[in-house]
Length: 314
Image 1 (cartoon, rainbow, N blue to C red):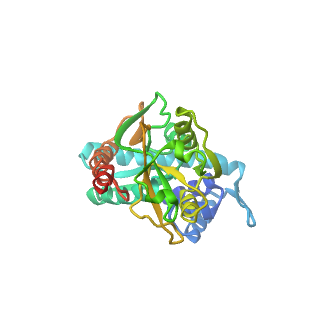
Image 2: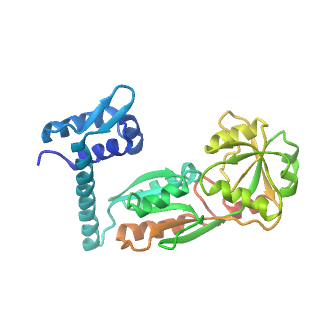
Image 3: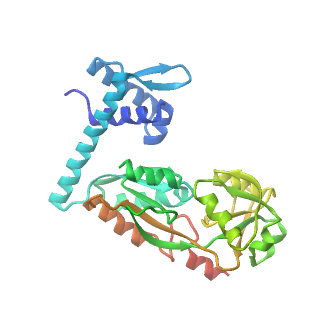
């Protein structure tokens, strides 16, 4: 066999994303390296795996579709060898696919992953970020091993371990009249323009807060990108609701946002890690779970103002 597992991993990334560019972003490998690996694989197998479309990405050939399934099976078997060796030697090693909710990922995922790999040098983390429905789908399809996410509509076959509750709060620009308030109610917000985080399950969570009080929010804009929402808020387009509390109060354009406590009994979001119940927990996964429990709590959350710290500031 004159092809490598690494070449197969590059091929899988390109096959699943349909793009050298997207594959490069997904696995953090340069585009020329991926293109070269695919060309070498095609040469070794004497088979065309992709049809190249100018400026429109790639599409798998019939042979390529079969190869993609077989390549994924081979890589999974290879990862199982590492896991088996880890279990036998009592050493934590191997690759773990860690998913994270897109609103949490920029803050939580980098520090959590780096600290875990520092503690266990023979282990590696392949990070993934997506919205809740895709994370749950990834667990069911074994595309990710564990997800750092919220307790939103967790199905019965998913095991969710809670780590910390995040209260909901309002975000306004620093010149907004509410920026000087210590707290605000949903009734005070209802008629003001809301910039809604429009992600599956998240949008329902925020609108349900108003419905519980018999109110209807005035939704002015919907965006699925938190950074756009923060910049819109900072520029005075309206307010938003959030549970995440980034340590930085600056939007990407340099303008400031202000966090205002939401009064009343409002359901918080609970950060935790989710795994498939029927999945046998490897030593690697168990070590990551223990690490996450020690790393995310009411007193400390990577990249965020933890609830306990936020209370001290008030």
